[in-house]
Image (tube, rainbow over all chains, first blue to last red; front, side):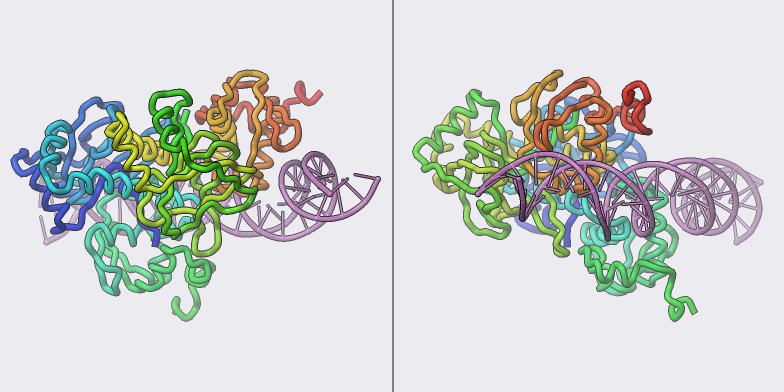
Length: 245
Length: 245
DNA sequence: CGCCTAATTGAACTTGTTCAAGAACTGTGG
DNA sequence: CCACAGTTCTTGAACAAGTTCAATTAGGCG
């Protein structure tokens, strides 16, 4: 399956050696709270802080000159941001839900990281992971139908929030449809239609717009991977009579 | 203007300090020749070499499970590849035109780079540049019309081959239409139509399919940047009578 | 000059967008 | 606890952009 971008952020396996060391760097940083919709930093911001998201969801986006917005990534609890920036920010970060985070300055960060046993591993593996993730998103968005993208997005959210793709798994889509749309390069209407279709075909069930329950994990996975045969069989044409009856 | 990806490759300003030092690393490497259409390395290849393209054009691509191809980048003369890979190759590299290149092993590379004054700068700035470029391509492909993408592609080729976007500049599109299509997420027919439209509107002129002459650099630039007003004015509707007559 | 491939063009079709209602959810106050 | 208001989400219908399929034309190269 193609994973989505962790652009300019990084999720370390919780409890891993790397994660532990990184967390230590933030140990004495104050915990900040950011309300939904409020900004954390902005494009062209010159600040150089590095953040650790403790709770909530953050969206990273850029604006095109004509006002269109492109969401380049989401940050979930446990994600870092700011590790691979240049002098200027490349995007704006905003809280989607209520967010708790910690921040340290870049210089502080490098001072401290130099004293950990992870220096090399960290400095080199991090940007690579991001690179790969960004390419994966590109692949995904470039050549996939709306239905495939939405399916892959659900699988992505499951992965990032620690859910397995099993029957009965419950996901929470903490972001509104417009954010999903701007992330997938679609409109809210199309995202909505694709989700409805997945529901109508019995692949998922919904409990309100943001609570998703996986009903046919295998099919969701195949859709997410771009298996065209399944796509056509499951997604196209009106609902089969047998199912509708 | 949004620049295109230099995914997993890097162009250093010719003659710059960095470029000079990097070139030195290859000074005693043999020069290899690769014929058009032949592979240089493949996805999942375990080799760890780093390449410098001396002449010609290389395409980097990945295949989706269903057989669709996505070109993630082109390498022009002076570009490096292999600097930010993991153990496994992420894509396949093929010569588009006749290519001359040099290679050194990764271990050799790191040994040598450690003795240059650029170590830090190189290790850190390189992956960042790639990251930004990949994001830029994402932005570009995600939310732009076929005409905008093709215009941006022409600007990109001009930039990478050292041409300025001035009236009368001549570009050579060394890659076939199918490569442009797979890079932009379009079909060859759509690429062809967009190019024809640019010609019909007098923005460019063609001397055979691969020789492009810039006639209205300002308009091309505006299209490439996604200026919608120009797009509509220049690109939509049949050719204005005044021009057609 | 003539062949073979790549590029262009045309027409029907598909997919996603746009515009316009309508329904459902969330949060607040009675 | 329920009703109301504002928002978000869903759904429908017309439309537009790009794809697909099918010829046709143009280039490159022997």
